Length: 85
Image 1 (tube, rainbow, N blue to C red):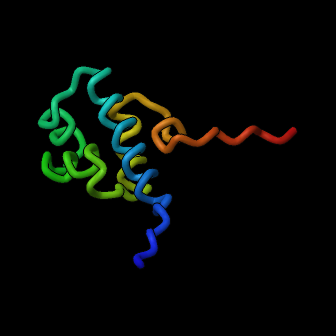
Image 2 (cartoon, rainbow, N blue to C red):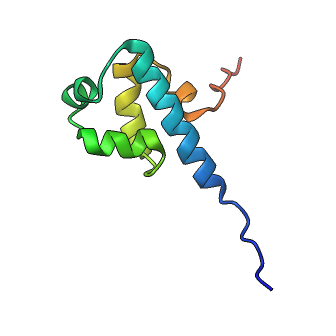
């Protein structure tokens, strides 16, 4: 009897971040080549991130966010912190 392995939440996170990155790229009208030349990240590596094969580091997402004209928090799928008064 084989027990099923529980899904890894990082897998879902990686895929969702990739989907948001790709949607932002398409919305701005960039090809992988356009984005690669603006960020110095190879097309192959970008494809790995956007497909969810590889989880981009926070540093990579922070580099991509301004080029894609999208908020870092939006790409990560988390709410921006609310300033304390």
